[in-house]
Length: 561
Image (tube, rainbow, N blue to C red; front, side, top):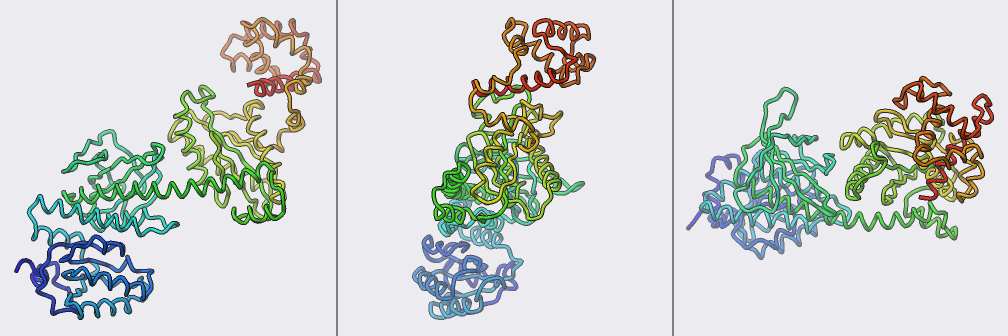
C-alpha cells in the first residue's frame, strides 16, 4: 500500500483536522491532489485525488445543483475531501449533509481542516511525498492548469472573472497578487497587494524554471513607507489590439518556489483568456450602445416608440436635463500626433481616465475623441456645475500628463437641454466649442486643460450656423484680406504679430516679450501692417472688426482642411 489518507493525517499540518464522515476509507491510497475552485473541475479528475475546497465554488448553487455535482463526483473514486467550513456559503449545512452521505456510501473520508491551514501547504506536502521533482512539477502544472481552465469555464456572461482568478492564484502561492492595465491602473487585487505599480529601472529579467510564453521581471519594492524591501514578480502580457497588462505578485508572506512559477504561468494564461472574453463582450455592448448613442446624438430618432426603446436600453430617463461634452487630446508641441499608433495609444489613456473620473454618464468612443452624455443633477446651479467639471477635467489632465507631459485635454461643452430629443443640439454645440478652443485662445498655460462652454462663445455662436467658407468670409474686413494676400514669406510673421498685438491690448512691450523679438521690430511690423492694410488702430470699432476677422479666418482655414 502506498501513501494513504491515514498517513496524510499523521502530518503535522493536519494536527487539528477532524474526520466528519467516511472513516472506513482512511486507507484509501492517494494518487494526487487538487483544489476545487469551480464545479467543472470534476471533468479533469482522474481518480485517487485528495480534493481541497472551501465551498467557494458552490457558494451560490442550489442544494439540488450541489447534489447533482456530488453524483457526478461519485463516479471518479477520489481518495478524500478536505473542507473548510465558511459561513458565507448559501445552505452550507445542507450541502455538507449531502457530502457526508456521499462519504458514508462510497467510503471517501471527509476531513474538516482549519481555515488558517493553507491549501498551498497541503498541495506541497502531498506532492513532495508522492513524486520526484520532475514529476512533481509536471503534476502540479496539470493541477493548476486544470483548475484555472475549470474556473474559466464557470464564468457567467456578466461575471468579472479576473478577481476570481487572482483569488485562486493567491491560495496557490500564498502571496498577494494584483493586475494592472497599460496605464498602471489597478484592475483587481487580493488582500495585502500593492495598489500601485511602478516598474523600477533596476528591475531584472527573470527566467522561470521552465519554458514560458511570457516576459517576467523581478524587482524590489516596499509595501509601505519606510518598510522593508521585498521581491516582486511582474509579468507582462498582451491582450487584444496590443494592449499591455501587468500581473504583479509580491513575495510578502512566503518565499517564491518553483511551484509558484508554475501557478503564476497558468494564472497568466487564464487572465489572458478572461480578458479576451471580457473584451469581446464589451465590444458587442459598446457597439450596441454606440449605435443607440449615434441615433440620439444625430437626432435620427424616427418615432416615439423607437426613442423609448433606445433610451430604456441605454438606461437614461426621457425627460431629464442633459449636457454633452466632447473631449480630445492635443499635442502642445506639434498640435498633432506624429504616428497614428501613438494617437491611438494615448486615446485609450484618455478614455480610461474619462471612465474613471466621470460618474453616471454614457460614453461614446470616436476615432480620436470621447463623447459624454451627462445627466444634470436636479437643482444644481451653473456655478456648481462649472466648478465640478473643472475639477473633474483637472483630474483627467493629471492622469494624462503622467503618461505624456506634452498632451493637453480639450473639452467642448454644449448647453444644458431638456429631454433626450434635444441632446443632438447640445452635441453639435459641444463639437463647435471644441473646434473653437484653439481659435478663440482657450488654451491656457502649463498643463492646465482647456474647457470651452458654447454659451461663452458670444457672437461666434451665430457664426457656427454658417456652413460654408464663402459665407464666413463675408465677416473678414477688406483691410485684413489685404494682409492675408500679402507676400507669402512675410505675411506669416505679420499676421502673428497683429494677433498678438490685439490680444495684448495693443501694448508693444508685451507683444515683443510674447514673440521674443525686439521692441523696435514689433513697432516696425505694426507700422508695416497699418501701411499695407490701412487699419486705424485708434478706431475701436475697426479694431473689433479686425479681431473678429482674424478668428473667422481661422474658421475658414479649418473648413478648408
